[in-house]
View (spheres, rainbow, N blue to C red):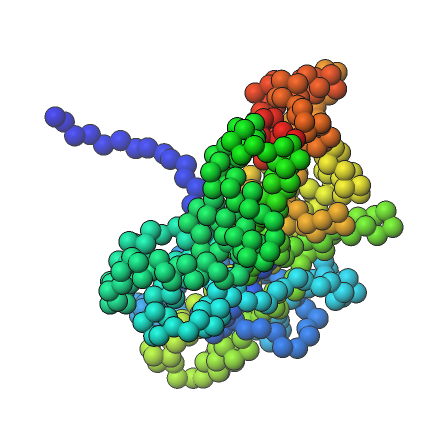
Length: 495
């Protein structure tokens, strides 16, 4: 075997630490940005929150060599110490290392001060259960077992751990030997807590817990209990004829039972505490306002404080510059200070670039879907993919994707994830390209308006859409229906 040498040329793309930091910041929603800034403030003493109002904002004026990928090391050679240049850090003006204000031209005081960002402070679901534990007269041992059970309950209110697994948890974590009967007895007590249906092991048990509570309150739900106890599978599959024959129910009696059951809560923990905060309590990143027919965008910066380079750190560099004696220890300290100042400058740059990227992306989406933002009509949405926005903004597709997947915009018609405005195209019989979002909206309207006693099959929905001029296959209709969380026709049937 012979060895040989060859010369190869490769083109590689390497992200700088600053670019990586920007990508991470882009993914953070506004709701979490304040926490991320606090972390940076704690890690870097050269970064601080602006306490006074300043006219100037930070402008990027670094020399070309500041964009190198190399990072400062705390330990350096003698030549590094001898060549410490701090001229860029001790200028008297604020041009080089100035204050950074997030509320730039995009944050008019008159608009921003009037916005109310929906924060919420409330008891969590598990806190609510823990409070009810205090109302039970339990000895210390039983209380610890009950706390273990409550801690095992999922956010939607279900207890999905087996009794034997809870038994093992108690033995290994709390050194408590508890029998399954003892644990099940406490589970039974916790199942009487609010909200009704909590601590159930299955959906069937959850619904029966709620019905049994109604029964104790004097409600006429005995038949509904019989249906869920003996015909649960038939009920979920809507085989109502089998239920009617088995329990000898009239149409009216069955209809009353169905109404009683569908009013129950299948997720008893879903409306308490933090379990649905991502859906019900969205903090928007943008606000779109219709000002006399003209749409205006503002960026939510309520929870992003104004940042600047620490005056104290700049003063330390000035003192070093004025001093005549410069030993190795002082030079090491100066390199450390320069490193911290650069890190602060990079973070300030990244925050400002984040805001610029968000605003540019949102402005382009607004321009592309202008008709929707004016009317709120989903059928006016144009086909739009990530590439369309990337080409208009000159951003990378991955950058647009990060913004679209994690950011929300508040309009007068509701709050939407930016991802909502992206959709593929579908051609009509006239050759016109329309958004798949438009087709889904029409499909949803058809299902909503159908006769529930004879719901429309996928084949019939396909025919109706084709009659309206949309070239669409039955399998595509089935796919859109599933994406809209619409069940098949048999499961939509009502008496």
